[in-house]
Length: 287
Image (cartoon, rainbow, N blue to C red; front, side):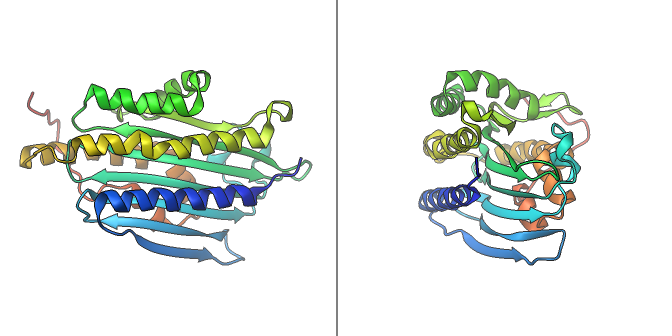
């Protein structure tokens, strides 16, 4: 069965536009729009659209990026579970989002949906999908965590949620600290089903379900917490916890490694970094 990557691209661009419009309405500040292209002949060719806000009323920094790139050889970071595809020509596309709110009582959030396709020398094109969303509070509220997880479960169904929730907990874990990054959500990678179970179309449906659920999973939490009062004590704790976010993204995150080691656009990849973070030697916050 032929793979229609054009339909995936059209969906991802529409998803990005819908999410950014909703976030602009919530913040009141417009997102910068930065379209880019990679010409043919380099390690990667393709195009993308970075949408970013800084110093907004709600979001201190946040981005929602689309990229679609092609390369002559799939990098090792993308073939850990598919050794037979190492070095094959490939294309990768996705939408990736990270939001760092100003108010420490509003959690940071990450969402990503993506597709990769590769064509080995002796075989047909193979596609696989990945994605998910996860919540990283600074001050946790059980109601917020329950709402976020209920939204994830409703989006993909109880069966997949039972698989992808523990996967999220395992993936977003700072092994060098022995700490989870946040309260989780869902995560999946290298997702593919045989043709008799839906194949490419089933994977495409999964990333659509994930992406379409994001705004309803996150914005109600934002609205509940954005007006809570805070001071320098809370901002200080937020900056310390943001340091853990930086550590995870630079040390453990496969998507960051894939982008940076595969010749991706550093400015877009590193939009996930918070604007301010803090480290202190062996510091423990006050109870």
